[in-house]
Every structure is written in structure tokens, then in C-alpha cells.
Length: 193
Length: 193
Image 1 (tube, one colour):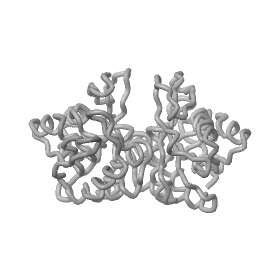
Image 2 (cartoon, chains in turn yellow, red):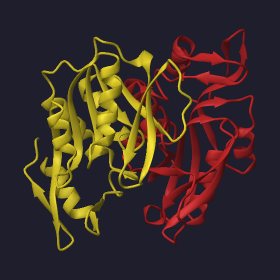
Image 3 (cartoon, chains in turn yellow, orange):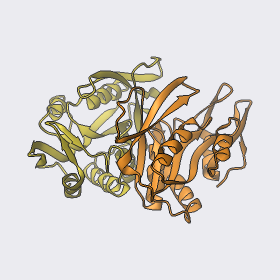
């Protein structure tokens, strides 16, 4: 997605070897216009998939995901992230390890919001090691719903998240793919849409 | 806001004396159509206030706030909530005590996203004791920006958040005001918009 790559070039900040800060338009301050375009792009890509629910994880996934939901005219569900959660039958949960923060969180979705008839599109702001998406996949499979794909705003293609998801049989669509950082600049790989 | 009150009556669940669950359209599953209407309503109410930024707190505030930002054509910033945050000069922070969860969190916003020229509209999903909004106000005042008002989706009018904010001199606009719960049903007070 050219608009997104241009925005990353203009406003993203490379920190060290593996961190890309996009807090001025995605992860802290949010540019609704860009979110709207992102929503339209994913909706176009998954137009024929019969999506019934968009699922993301709090917090940075919410803004892009709600615009994907709008463009597809379906509800959006955001999974909750918590360090200590009271397990109960109403909650679907998965453990997610964050390599960046080096903590394990429990992500959860209320069982009542998913059914075996659902066709789910997972949306997240970043794909690095794929742990968050794999956690959501585990939850969604537990109710027997179909997962039509994983839509990512920014993929770090030098980490193994995409491979993990594709090896598990899931379609990954990333709007920007960061191949590497060179002299503090982002070098993109060919995006999926 | 009649549409919102009707939705709360239809889909909200009263738990015990003081809890109203609206997880099927606002706090977990999100109805983008309702969020869009909420955005338009706040934008109309604050049309003449010259708002330059919408500020909320992760996570449930994000969906309504981004649609308010869209309707006002300004950026949205969501404050981060964390139990242990590394303080630094770039971060504006405030301690926020949650009566529900009985924990103190630190909310933070990067200083670079606010300036003394900003006219801020604070948006949140719920107003109970007002601690979250007061935390945001402290942060925003620290940079010298103006706070034009606090826009709340659902106010629990039987708690003292509104009084705290009004006593401190801030305009509060709540789209639904819950006066009390009676036999498991919500009784509304007159909403502000």
C-alpha cells in the first residue's frame, strides 16, 4: 500500500536494529484518514471471503480494525490482554509471549461473540514473531470458526511471524513489509496489497 | 442520544448494584455504526469549540474517539495505561486509581503530541468516579493546552465523576446518563446531547 509506505518513510523512526516507531500515526497518535484507507484496502482484498467478524487485540489494533469492520460492514471484536485473568467457561483464552516486552500475557475473547458459522479476518498493527496472531488463531479455532486470513498493517519481514502463520496454513496480507533497516532508513519488501 | 439509550436498553446487562455491561457494542465487540453516530453527535456538540485534538485512554475509548476525530477532522491520541512505566522527560504522566479494579495505573502521553496551542476534547467510554478523565486533564494542562470539554459515552450519574469534573471547571457532555438501576433495568437521567 503505497500511501502507507510513504507515511512510514516520512514519519516512522528507526530505533536500533529492529524497532520501528510509528507512534505519530498508528500506535499512539492516530491518523483516522490513513486508518480509513487501510480499512478500505483490506476490505477490497477480502471482498470475496464472506467475512462476518473482524478480530484484533487491544490497543493499537483497534483503530485500523474498526475501519476494516466498517468497510466490510461487520462487527469488530478486540481481544483483551491481561497479565492475570480469571479463567471461566465464558472466556476463550490463549497465552501470548511478547519477545519485545519479555512477558507472557493472556489474551481473551468472550465465547458468545464467536460461533462456528463465523468467517473471521484477524487484523493487527504489527507482525513480528506472530505470537499475538497465533494466540488469536488458537482462540478462534476453539469455537470452530473459519479464519479467512490475517491482515497486517506493518510486517517486519526479517522476523519469522509470517513464516509461522503461513506454515500453519493461514493467508497473510501485509500492507507494508519491512525487509530491513539500512542507515536508519526502512527498506521495503513487496507488499501484499 | 436516543439511539444510544435504546441500544443500552436492548443490549446492556445490569450486574449487581453498579455494573452495566455493554460488551456487545462498545467495550469488547464494537458496533462501528453506533460509533460513527456517536462521533457525529460529539462533533456537532463541539462544532464551535475549535477542537484540534481528541484525547482518550486505551482501550475502550479508542473506537468512539477515532470516530469523533473523523467527524471533527483532527488527530486522535490515546493515552497508554501501564502499571510500571519508565518515566522520562518525553512522557506526560498521571496516576489514575480505578475503584472497580482497585489498582493504580499510570497513564501517559508523549509530550510531542500536545502543544500549548491545542484545544482538546477528551473522550471516554464511561464516566464513574472521573479518575481517568482527571488524569488526562492533569496531563493536558501540563503542556498548557486548553481543554474544551469531556465527552462521555455512558455516564453513571449516581457516582461523583461528573461533579468532580464540573467542580474543576470542565464542561461534561454525556450521551447517555444512567440515573440508577431498578429491578435489573437502567433508568436514564436527561442526557446532554
